[in-house]
Length: 420
Figure 1 (cartoon, rainbow, N blue to C red):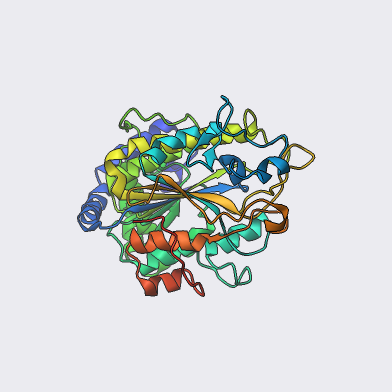
Figure 2 (figure 1 turned 60 degrees about the vertical axis):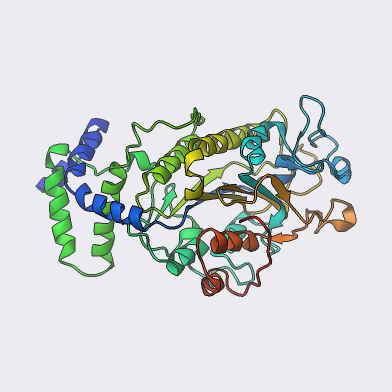
C-alpha cells in the first residue's frame, strides 16, 4: 500500500472530510472561484430545475377535476370531495382544485408564479414505468427504446453556450437520470453539501496537486473528467451549504426531498454556473391503499408541496433565476381498483414554477372523464409534455428553433401559454 492509499484508507471520518474542505478551499477552489465569477458575469438565463415524481403520481388526486361529475362516478371511495367541507378540494378556478394535502401550492399559485397543466403527458402508449422513463427522458416517444442514447436535457446543454462554470449540471442522486445521459460537465451528486474531497486534511493539498498535475499531462476524456471533478468539488465547497439560512421564513421538511431542494435553492443563489439541477422523488406507485386524504398519497403530497412552497418562498428575490418543472412518467387510471388504489394510467398533471411563468391558472384542454372520452380507461392526453418543455426552452432559456428541433426531433410544437 503506498502513501496515497494509506491516506485514503478506512478513516474517512466526518471530521476528516470537513477538514478536507477547508484545505481544498484554500487551493483548488481558487481556480473554481474564478470560473464561478466568470459564470456570474455571463449568466443570462435561469437555472432549469427538473423534479421528477417517479412511480406515476396520481394527477386526478393532486389536481382534482371536481367540476367533472364522472370523476365521482369512477372513484366512489377515493375521490376528493368538492370544495366546502374541511376535507374538500381547495378551489383553483371553479372546475379544478387541489387536494387538501397539496394546499401549500396555493401560495405560489395565487401569486401568479405556478401554472398547472392537466391532461398532459407523453403520447406513447406504454404503461411500463421503465419504458416511460426512457421515452420521456430521451424526449422522443415515437422512436424505439434504445435508438436514442442522449437525454433531452443533455441536448439542451449542447444547444446553448456554457455559462463558464466547471459544473453545468447536477443530477441530485446516486446516478444521472436518463434526461442527462450524454451530458458533458454533469455529475450525479447525492448530497451537494457533502460532496467533499476524501482523505486526511493534512495531506489534501498535496494529493489534489498530484492528481491535477498527473491528469493535466494527459489529454483525453479521463484527464478532463478528473480535472472537472476536482474543480466541481472545490466549487461546491465554496457554496456554503452547511451555514445556509433560507430566506423569508421558508421551512423545508426534514426529509431527503427537503434537503435536496434546500441545496438547489442555495445553488441558485450562489450563481456558480450550474445550469441544470435534476431531483427525483419516488414512491408514487400506489396500486393499493391510495389514501388521498389521510394515507400514503396524502403524505407524499404533503411532503412534496411543503418542499416546493419552501423552495418558492426561499427564492422570492430570485424568481427570474430559475424555472422548475415537476412531472411524472404517466398518470393513473380514472377508475379506482378493488384494492382502494389506482393502476397505471396515461394523462397527468404537470407543474411549472418560477419567474416568467404564466401562473395562477390551470392550463388544460380538458377531454372529460366520461367513459367514451377515456383513452383505454385513462385520462386522455391533450397537451404533449414536449410542448410545455419546448415553450420553457424557447421563452425562458433562449433556445432557438434549430435548437428545439435537435432537443425534440420530429415534433411539431403547439403553443401552450405556460411561459411569458
